[in-house]
Image (cartoon, rainbow, N blue to C red; front, side, top):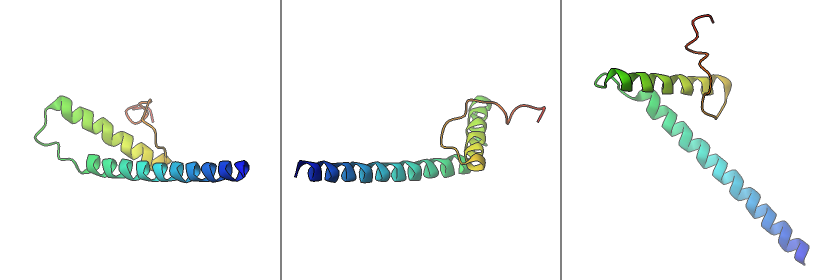
Length: 80
């Protein structure tokens, strides 16, 4: 009986984890769409630079199907 209860709890936890991952991915997709659509024409040069780097991160994630933040400057590197 105890084993059955533990199995049920593990199944529920796994389902919750999948749901959290799904909604997290949906939130990131929404944030990425908003970042790409943002109008920066009225912003200061520093703010524009920040959003340009954010857009590059979005494009990197889309290209490489990666969900983490960027820690490289490969898009800025002029040698590639």
